[in-house]
Image 1 (tube, rainbow, N blue to C red):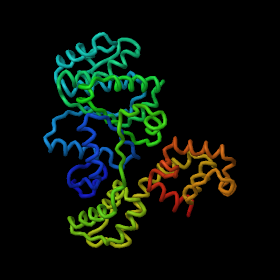
Image 2 (image 1 turned 180 degrees about the vertical axis):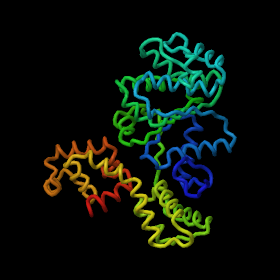
Image 3 (image 1 turned 45 degrees about the horizontal axis):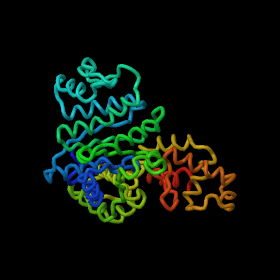
Image 4 (image 1 turned 45 degrees about the vertical axis):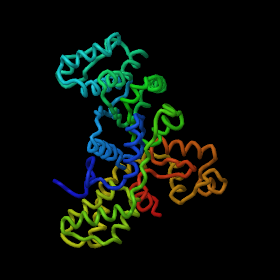
Length: 382
């Protein structure tokens, strides 16, 4: 069913709200043949940003092809290579004969071989004849470059959940070779092939691109800024008007404050609100809609809190109270954090669990605004 308040899928066009600057930045980077990293928490609009930008590029009659896949269920270097090869080959070939010819031409001499039976039954295009070697990895990672160069086709390789590369055995080995392949790509290859590395686990992506600095000076980050309240207000009010309903601006302002202008949560709330109302959106409808949304998400919030140690909970409480000098004697004593060394361990643990992150000025930020609201109101009763 068509709805103004779309929160369950990627959106473009009239349903895409804000982010004009980010779209322009992404389009500019890609038009110059550069690589991109985008890492923000889940459900903040990363995929919609990419789709909207590609939509605008096509509207401007820019010619390109996309190879898109996810590392969500990838845990080995071999599986990564097989997924990459299968996806990219699928962009340039359609018949078994064409696929087989591509593999023989571009991967001949490697351990990868065309796997007709597997591919015929919806499986991978290639399989390994022996254990993956470093040269096999180089062959797979350079495959998009060589294919784009040979065909003269602009290719965008979009890799979702890229941070899961860290879950592979020996991730640094793979990332070192990955970086080597990207660095050694020829000028024409770099011009025609760009990588878009997308991740929803912010701190894991920071580990790759900021702490270990892989692909240094070979990738540009597109950071998603909060959508302005005014844009969200117009979107919500107009959305309700489409179905003949009215919501007061004060209600929109209140919800945006709670949800910190997170468009996914705002749309989720508005969709629930829309289903519970017939005309004017009144206070009970607003409150029931918020409670319904909390009830939907509460199980994962409870599960996350149950996995935390007592000390980690103490540090979270300090963050919610607005503390910043966590290693000061006063804060350590007041929140029973034990020691400054323990504080460092607690910060690292909460970052690894993707509950918090730290800004460039070392300010702690809770990544999920609805989780933050739930913790304040229903867990810590602040």
